[in-house]
Image (cartoon, rainbow, N blue to C red):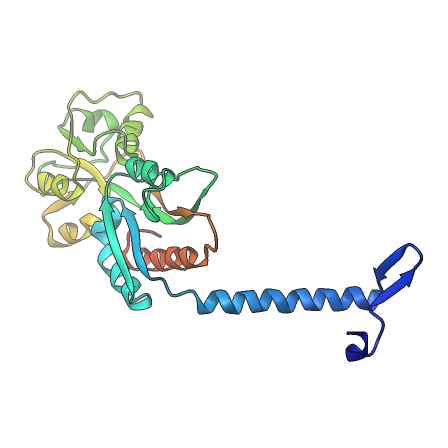
Length: 257
């Protein structure tokens, strides 16, 4: 090797052998080349094949999942997807237990073997049927607590957000109804059965059509963070790529900002 490079790599003495300063520099360059070779091989192996078990909360499913899956299929044409739509707490349990490979959810896993990537924040808003409430001033939590309210059942981030919005003003609404489907909840709101906090992205069409009203309130409605979660076993770059893709699609759909 020393004949090839033209200088001494090792210093030999009675105690043994050690690298010369130039030998150390050569070693660092060799390590860099080996790392580059590993990266090239990993990139060549990057196309994903087989079954990918994806979980999604309903807001992401309604707002942008179709575009996400279409783009995913173009990037990984040999991939088959098994899709589960559920509330974030259930998706979190499944990915922590190894039952999912990738999930889009509002409940980060907080598991040592699962990575959570923040995709953005989803704006939430109070909505009611068109003309149901004659608004002259922003509604307080006490005002809305007198009305029938519809929410996703606990445990869910949206239920916790709804109840927390009232609790922050020390108000306890007596008439809380639940529905496990955001799409059905929206239809119930359109029908005038109840009011609800819903993601702005999934009610935007109804707002534009004039079938529901956006309620002005005295206390801001917090946004909900949206995460991508995936196991950290082995090379995670494919899942990082999928998470980046999901973030781009959800941003374009208006679900996140």
